[in-house]
Length: 298
Ligand SMILES: [Zn+2]
Image (cartoon, rainbow, N blue to C red; front, side, top):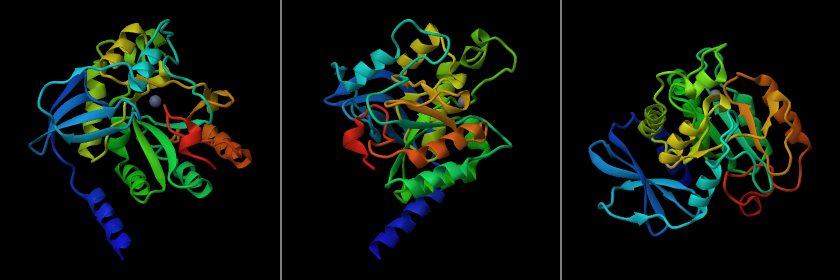
């Protein structure tokens, strides 16, 4: 009975009206013990902060602490961030593209007003793997704006303990100009404010009751030194991929797999669903930045 009631409460909370976020401010991370403060904001009038645990990489929200803290000592978080933003800054697929062990599934939710949502992908994961199944979403604000029902479905699976979702940032508008050279496209488009657009997506997630993670994926996987530094300045870790399935890249041990959850590339989802039928033993799916052997075993 207690379980049923708490489940119903969770669903009620999901349906609750969005909260109001104001004064959203990014900070260069300052640390208290094992916690780095990334943002402060007012939520329905209460002063709050978004923090990351520098050991586990988990983000959380709590009432804002008094100003203070100290520069963060070397940690799992600072080391991963430094690795992700280091030279030589290639035009495509910069950031973390591979890990040790297992495989990490990332699903991009780029804007797609008509196409929608690869329900079959998440449904198959829920049917196939022990719960909760870890999945990283890279979500854009323009996808959320057109797919509130799909967002609600993801949140329900999360509340029911079926999926363990990491809410990655794919910018709010996810600019794209067909035919333009990559040097002037996606986040490198003229006049585009990457910092503001990234923070707008975080604010949108918070307004839906979702805690943003520290992971970021550049639209089109296109970036340069300056844009990488912008994301670093926000304390976010760029994530690329060494297994973009629809482009024919085959996953290996440690791969960060990229498929689209927005029906942009059904071919990649077809390949992934075929692939997981044959995989056994070492965990196929685990969270970015964590040791697969300790997190998820089939
Ligand atoms: Zn995208």
